[in-house]
Image (cartoon, rainbow, N blue to C red; front, side, top):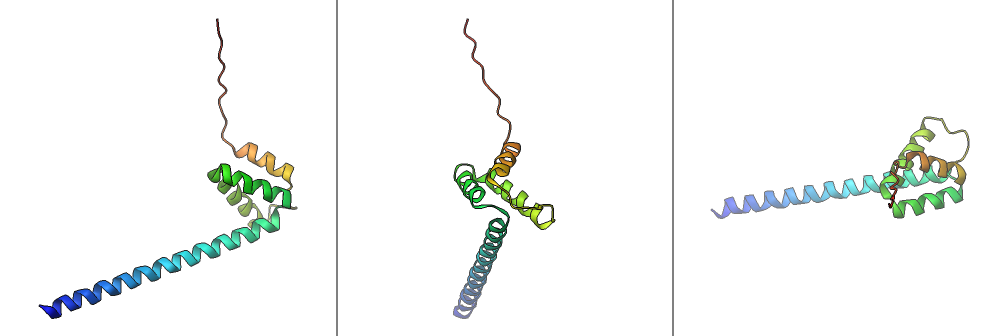
Amino acid sequence: MDDLEEIRRRKLMELQRQKELEEIQKEEMRRQYEAQKKAILRAILEPEAKERLSRVKLAHPELAEAVENQLIYLAQSGRLQSKITDKMLVEILRRVQPKKRETKIIRK
């Protein structure tokens, strides 16, 4: 019985090590992806636009993520001819932002 328990314990330890290694690899890949993303955004955004995007990311992370992915796609497909200015980024944010319904209160 001791041999069987020892084998189980070894197998469990081996599986735990494999899982830890996989998690470390995933984390490293995520870091590399984020570093590449930052490098691309730094190359295609002017400083003011980059600053605005970082502020938007604090308030609306999902919106900023969508805009970042869209800009990266445009840059990689060669559709961007120049750097994105702050004014251009504001326009992009307006177009991407979901439409809000205005509430009007009429008192009689």
